[in-house]
Image (cartoon, rainbow over all chains, first blue to last red; front, side, top):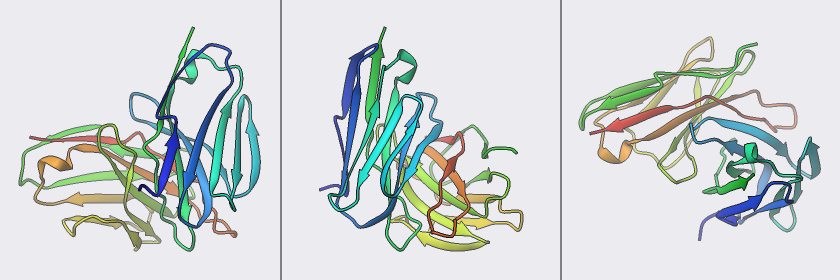
Length: 109
Length: 115
């Protein structure tokens, strides 16, 4: 079993839909990254959180450390949101990040 | 303030050769992490350098080695290249905060193809 599981693996949505991507992990963590990767390969950090909830524009990330679960929500999705979204928890006591395989999102106009 | 840069962008090598990839960290960042991302997979942690010392290593053989320089830029060296080393190599820089929570800023990656 992978230490980080993301669901769904692939997601196609219509423009304007509310999207949720889930991340579950089995190790103790001190923080968790949500990352966005476009087809060219470049990775952008969306959020770094260790508790609660963060919001940035149309993006919201939540984390429940006790339940070992985090979610990324996109409100009013747009075709430019099409990308791979990767969850990357940082294992406790280290600076090592482990990465999910990502959720491939496609938003249709 | 400049972001994280990597060079070269693309590289083609043959089996058995050696390669050096370079990363310049974001201004003010003293920590660099290297990752290997095979096609269709999430990045895998190779190692991290903090103030010129290796600060942690993933499950990669010794032929993957690195350096960090006084200006905090870094190199990843891979000896005796194998076909499976073909991947996107990403570096990320950060500055560990007081709470030990560091946000990583990624470079654009170097795509290595081994023939």
